Length: 139
Image (cartoon, rainbow, N blue to C red; front, side, top):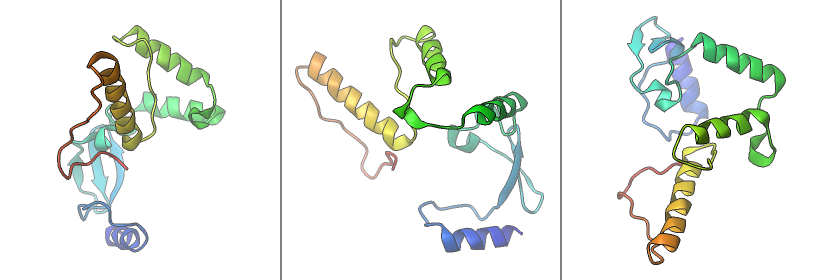
């Protein structure tokens, strides 16, 4: 089964990542299982997406409850869950506003815009951004 998943993926998905030759089929907490039944510890939390672990009961319940009502409408519309989260984040941080994004590229674009805005206002017009050569900044 694992080789079938790998072969199908290699045939139909662009090779933008160097993947490990492991076909993951389920997760629970910080553990992952492959198609051969081997167990692994997920040290990267699904690249920081599953910080509470895989199949966390409270997260699964919240996702299911929200999906039954409304799944996703983007940032083009106002939604109560987003407004509530923004309020909570502001109340519990240094910020007076928040920025929601969908991807690493948008997060980095927002960070660059914020840095340039700050530079224009507070650093005599500074606008250049320095990055590491060949580094990854999102798609």
